[in-house]
Amino acid sequence: MRSTWPRTSRNGKSLSLNNVMNRQILPACKAANIQWKGWHGFRRGLATNLHALGVDDLTIQRILRHSRVSTTQKCYIKTLPEQSVAGMHRLEVALGEIPGLVQ
Image: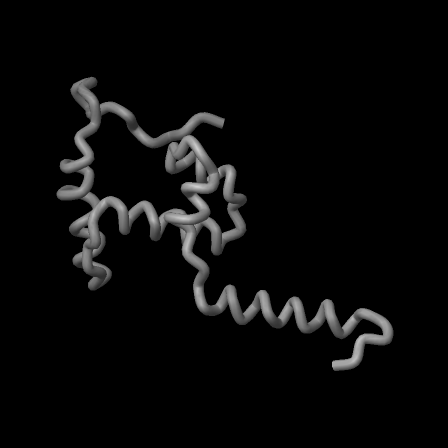
């Protein structure tokens, strides 16, 4: 599947990330009352949200173009509080299904 993200501008030149930020991202942030935290924050937010949506770490690594998945996992994917609560609940359920385990 090919990406539909434009890599060049209408005139065929390389896309300027500053133009994307100024023309698209900053107005969207302002409309949503979200403070812009820079490109690193944007990429971390993207990785975290993709992970929360169930996208696997290798796919997120490829989207962010990291050479190692460990970089993506350690520096970009952040666990959300509700994910931690849900994970502990799944553990409790799993432990409750073990015969003879005293709780």
